[in-house]
Picture (cartoon, rainbow, N blue to C red):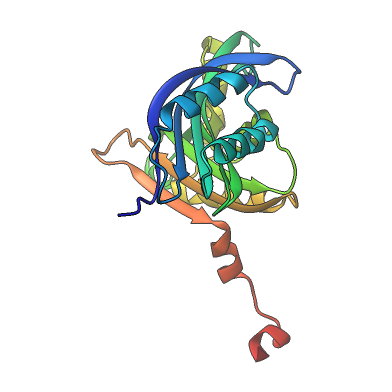
Length: 257
């Protein structure tokens, strides 16, 4: 029986990721690495996986991905190779009023393939605040708010920094989340969210519009989960770039075809 893929999964490995500022950030990634081997291949592939990972762990980037995957593919005589690398990425973020610095953690993922299904996907998970518009409308004072998480996945024509993708997402929410807030900052974020109420549907549409406006991104998907503060369940919304095509108006030539 020919197997579809073989590989390793959930191996934690120290890597260095290049920052927009020019430095390298040390982090620990959870890695899944798989190959589609020839039917008659009998030798173990784990040692090859680990040896190649060790070779490239000093700087893991988009450009390195293709080299790493090609090397694994060649060494194992595989038809294709696929790699997923999920890791925490830390950015210094200053509080909105007092400018107190603090480290914010974001989850990021590099997904790449070579051979069958060759492509590269950059993913980020960004925490945010949402405030319920209907709660604000029906209440004499106050409105319930909650923390939400936005997952953005993109395919792009050119290199995009993780930092820029996070900033793009954070510009489409009721209010950003910060690691450190003092009293003036708490007042600001509370009022910021109250003045910018959004359902998860609003957030997913807004982020999609911001991504769609970038000509260097040719595919994307956005998912938003709101961890509801007054419900047992979460609220969720999802959209991808195909939805924008479906919603686009047709001209006469398109209708004829």
